[in-house]
Structures are given as C-alpha cells and as structure tokens.
Length: 428
Ligand SMILES: *Cc1c(COP(=O)(O)O)cnc(C)c1O
Image (cartoon, rainbow, N blue to C red; front, side, top):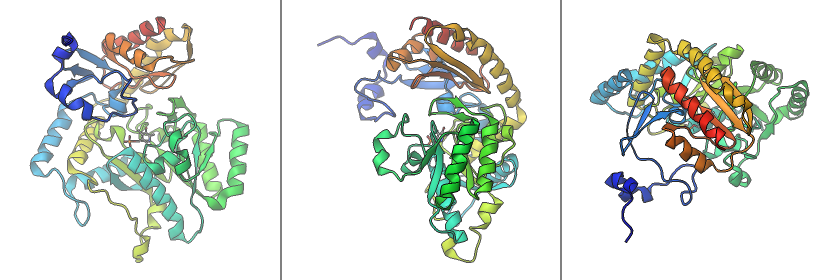
C-alpha cells in the first residue's frame, strides 16, 4: 500500500472521512484539484489545516467586505444568539429585521422603502421577478410576462434567475431548453445599440414586465464594466415604455464599486433593487429585494389576491439581520468608502505592469475590483494551484483573473496579491 504523503498526513480526519460526501460548486469533482481544508479565518487571511496562511483576494465570493471575523459583527451575532437565533416572519416580527429594513430604506436612494427579506441572492432575484410580474397583474395589465436581460449578465442559479442570465457563455447553457424565454439584448452602450433596444421595446412593450441589469459591473459573467450612461438610458427607456427597472446590486452593493450602491454613481433610482453578498459582511446568507413606493402601493389593497405570495422559512433570520446591522454600523463608524478609494488606486498601480505582458487582453479597475483579462486561460485548475503555491487565494474563471479583496486589506497584503498575479502571468 502506498505511504501517506505529507499532505495527507496533515489533513484532518474529517477531511478524509467527509469530503467524498460533499458535492462541490461549479466543479468537475473528478478532475478539479481537491479543495483546501480551512480551519480559521481572520482579517484578509485564510488559515489552512496544515498551518499555511493564504492572503485572500476574493473575500469569499465578494461577501467579506470588512475582512473575516470582525469583532463587532461577531459580538452582535453572539448577543443575538443568546436572545433568539430565529423566529418565523409569518405573523411575527423582531427588532433586528425591523431595524435593518429601516436602515436599508434610509441608505437606498429615492423611495426604495419596502424590503422583502430572503436567504440568498438568487432568491432575491426570483422575488424581484415575481414582484414585477404581479405588479402588472395587480394593475390589470395582461400578458406582461417577459423580461429584458443583457448579454454577459448573471443573476443567480435558480431557474427564474437563470432565465434572465446570459446562457451563451454563462454557467447555465445546459438548461436553456427548460427555461422561460426572455429577451437577451446588448447593453445600450452605443447609439446603435440604444436604437436597437428602443426598437425592440417599441415592438414588444405589451409583453414586457421589466428590465433587469447589473449596474456598473457584470460580475460572474466576466467582470465586465458598463458606464453610468447605460443606466441612465435604461431608466429613460423603462419610463418611455412603462416598464419596471430592476437593478441587481447583489455584487455591487455595499461599497464594492466606490459608492454605497452602484446606482448612486449613475444618479438613477430603479423600481426594484436586489441586495445580498456583502449585506452581512460575509457572515451568513441573507438577501433583500427592495421596491419603491410606486411598486409597493400596487400590492397594498383590500383584495387578498393582490398580496405577494412568497415567504422563505428562514426569512429575515435574526442572526443574519444582526450581522447585517453590525455590518452597516461598520460602514458608519469606519472610513470604508475612503478605504475603497485608496484600494482602487492601489489596484490600479499594482496591476499596471500587467498591461504590457503577453497574453493580457485588458486590465481594468473600478472601486475595489481589479481585473486582468487574458486572451485565454488554458488550464484554470493549474492556474488556481499556482496562486496557492504563491501563498494567495485568487480564483480566476473564464478568461479573467480578478481581485475583490476585503476593503480592510493591508497595503502589504494587497501588494502581495498583485505581485503574485504578475509573477504567475509571467510564467504562463
Ligand atoms: C452572486 C450573485 C447572484 C446570486 O446570489 P447567490 O447568493 O449566489 O444566490 C445574483 N446576482 C448577482 C449579480 C450576483 O453576483
């Protein structure tokens, strides 16, 4: 029998015993490298079972905006756990949920005042789509069941959310035949594309409930940036053809692009906004779908049939709401947006050398998002492993190597992340 390698020796018992029962995300598990066993996190560090410490460049899928284990969030969750971890929201309500809803309404622009809580981003998108569909039903309009969505867009992995994501080069092509068909358009980022979208809307206005877009950055679809002018045009088109405008800010919300919400940078108020990822500062799953007064008023009625029929079991989980309130405290008490601005400049400077390197197609930075787009990445698994060898956790996908660190990352750690990217690209 083969002897254990040193790696296996250092792996904890739970790893060997349990791993084969864990179905991993977005992975061909047979050929993907085995996942790294993690035992602790702190700040911008991920501590592995063998004692190695990786500098984190991803912030756990963009959630851990204050770094891991922030004491203020931990204390808030611990306090809430002692009082009440959870109670259903049907017929009951609690302080953490009411306070969080009030605070979100206060932070969001315009009269985005009515907050529906759920447990994940995908579900928040499902709720946004249902609200938009029922908005038209409640107003008596018939047949408005389609959405305009955009190439390169990603709105989640549940079926309704997949149906408004770009399946061409997205993660959902397999299911295309099963999903309702919506309109996948080009973002109106040129006069020609604006005219084409205007023509489509003019022709189909009676079928369309709303327009859904990720403002400023299409994240999981390839870290593609779009301009504020695109969002202004979408607002104008939605108004012209009387459609609801949905901004999916699950990635961009809570400072990631430099303002608290991306819509602020464009001066545009959508009719519905979805939030999740950094809402709890990376502590636990929580999402919100927030609607304007105009939308909410259509559901407010003496008619029971006009109520929104949705209600997750763990809706507004008290621990998650406590974490989210604590995360919002940190945005108030610490200079997060200034840190994002500094981070933006540091990413710009740190990644600049990549511009001249062979195989690099484009380098771009917005807020705390730094992207090195390659012409192609031949072996993602190998590239990911190279980063771990360099002592960093960076997870390229498609043709994109990106950094979305915690806003609190130290200049030294950030320099090491950028340095690792430069070093690894040089060897490709
Ligand atoms: C991550 C993401 C989602 C899905 O959120 P989950 O919590 O993973 O379900 C939806 N929209 C955008 C823009 C996202 O980045």
